Image (cartoon, rainbow, N blue to C red):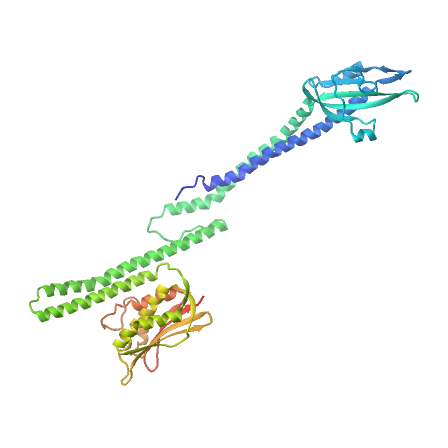
Length: 464
């Protein structure tokens, strides 16, 4: 499994602080643009006042003009020594009188046509530098000889940019300080929020491989408690599986030791037996012991398989029970047992074909081994397999008319390696396997008496 490049804490810090930095930079750029806009409005207002002040220095004198610009212009220019100011006077408009002759013509707009005496603002370049300019046209003269005068004034953008920079600095400096404080609070909050996970990680690291007890976490967010609950459920499942595995190994070792010891003992005796008839008897015992050992191994494997995860599919339990009964019918005929099926033709459910076939085979096998024992005189041994659907459950039953079990024996019927008698062939695992498989399918197995005599093994299973 590849290791993640960043820890959860670093990812949280990255996703919380990086957007904050981006927003701060974006806010600074937006604030700078807004500050430039308002500074330009202030510059336009200053230009408007200045150009009107210069225009008032024009005084009609007969058919001419008395222009007293030098002193007024000097006052305007000296307002800000760092800011470059230029002006030009032309009359008629466009015909240079005094000032800076390099002024560009102002743009003609619809607003100027509707209000000819209103100032017109525009951008221009003067000596290769961008300037903010204003143009104001003034009428003078008498009705017979009307004349017009244009006054143009331009200032550089130095003052506007300086104002915008000061405004942005005044705004962003406190925001930067707040951002630093917020970053510290975010880091502290993430560290505090990650503390339960750190504690959980330490608990897991301090555990040995054999320690599978539930984790304890008293104070933690809901999500962490949910995670701990999931881990505890996983630990419980692992502990249950480990316990089943250990029990299986112990049971297998215990149950296989006796028959294998018997096989070794019989083979030792057979090897030293000079009598052919006695040798044959010994070999029959070896064969029976080997068959019992093989049956025990198969049952142990089936028991182990019943505790593993298997896929569930849609299946017809009634058809499956009939198939198993047909497969075992030759054995029933050989034992002179009437094996038949009664019940619904089709019963559909979700389950494992492999496990359910194993369960049905074990129940019928038990009935064939022990159900024919103690049949009432004058009666034939019968085994009836049935499947019935009941609402959201179905019942699979195998019933025989044999001797049956007492109430105390029925209570022990599903215990591992418990046997009601010492008849050869059994190992006491068949019904234990059946119970495990029934519980894997959300159901339960039970043993019921039959009147006047007999035994009924019944599996109640969930249909959906």
